Picture 1 (cartoon, one colour):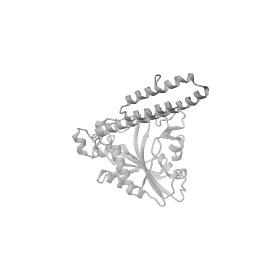
Picture 2 (tube, one colour):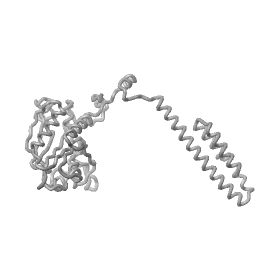
Picture 3 (cartoon, rainbow, N blue to C red):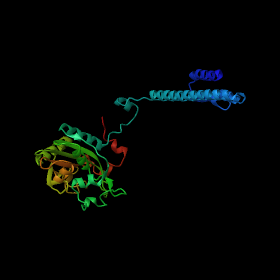
Picture 4 (cartoon, rainbow, N blue to C red):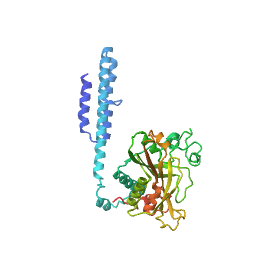
Length: 346
C-alpha cells in the first residue's frame, strides 16, 4: 500500500519538472506501462491473500486514475501555454491601420450589400423603426396564404419557387414573411424593417439572380396613408444617394397590398438613357409597395376596421448597383474577393 502511495507521490513530483508533452508521456509509461512501477506491484499480487489482492487492487486502481488525471491536466496546460506563446509572438493589432499596411496586408473591405444594408437599418432606426429577421426556410402559410396569395397564383408555380421534397416547405421567395411574423408578435402602432436573402428559380442575367437580397418594411397604426409611404421612401433614397433622386409611382398589382404601386428610380447607371441594368427603358423597378391588404392584417391578428398600414419590399441588390455603379448583379454574388476589396471600411 505504501509503495503505491510512494509511486503517486514520486510521479507528482517528477511531473512538476516536465516541460514537454513527450516527457509527460514517457513519465506516464514508467508508471503505468507494462513494465511500469505500478504494473510491477500488480504482478506480485499472485502471492497475496484474496483479501490483500482485493485491497491492493482497489488502491492501485485509484492510483492509476490519479496518474491519468494528472497527465491529462498537465498536457492541457502545456498545450495552452504553447498556443498562448505562439499567439503572443504573432500578435497583430488589427485596430491599427498603420500596422496592417506595414505588414503588407491588404484590407479586404466589406461586401457592398452589407455596407448599404447597415446604412438603411441606421436610417430606419433613426425614424423609429425596429429591425427584424426571419428564417430562410418557410412554410406555405407564411410565404403565401398569410400574404393573400391564393393556391392558383403564378408565384406558386414550380419555376418560381424552390420547394422541398414534402412540397410544404420552401426557400422563402420574399422577405414579406417577416411582415407576418412581425405582426403576430406586436400590437399597433408599430413600424419595422426586415432585411434578408430570398430565393427564386429565375434565369440569371445582368439584373436578375436566383439568390438575392431584399429589405421588407411595414408601418401599421390608425390613419396611415400613402403620403406616409411616399415620405419614408423619399427620405430613404435621399439619405442613401446623398441627393434628391428622381422617382415615379405607378399602379402595380400585388396580392398583399391594395392599392399597390411600383416605385421606380431613374437609372443611375445610364442616367435614364437606357442600358442592360434598366432593360433599356431608363427606369429601374426598385420598390413594390402599397397599403396592406385587410386579409393580410387579419392573418397577422390585427383588426383592419381599427388599423391600416403600408408595406414595401426594397430590392437591396438593385439599390446597391445604383449606389456603386455596378452593371451586373452577378458580380455581387460571385464570391470574388477582388470585387469586395474595392469597398473599403476605413
